[in-house]
Amino acid sequence: MTQQITADLVANVWKVLVSEGTVVAAGDTLAILESMKMEIPVHADGAGTVTRLAVAEGDVLDEGDLIAEID
Image (cartoon, rainbow, N blue to C red; front, top):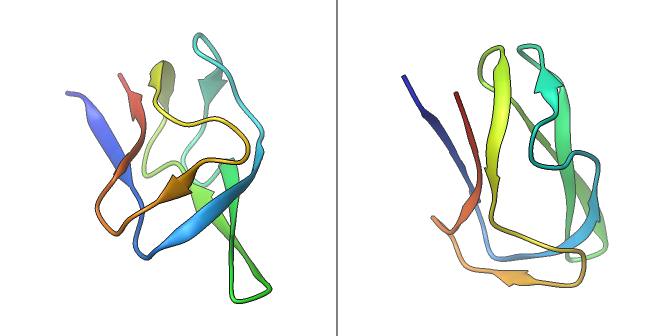
């Protein structure tokens, strides 16, 4: 089952910590967003492999935008 990781708020992508093909465990940090000078880590909901990375450092995200897919 594919997990879709989405943005919870409007933010900038400050740092991307994984790439497509990276194997992650539940709770691993995929990226760090920045909003109002606060750093917000984005975590994997479950274990799997990152099959799609939909963001790059410097991107601006709206609430609900796709960050990554994990299978």
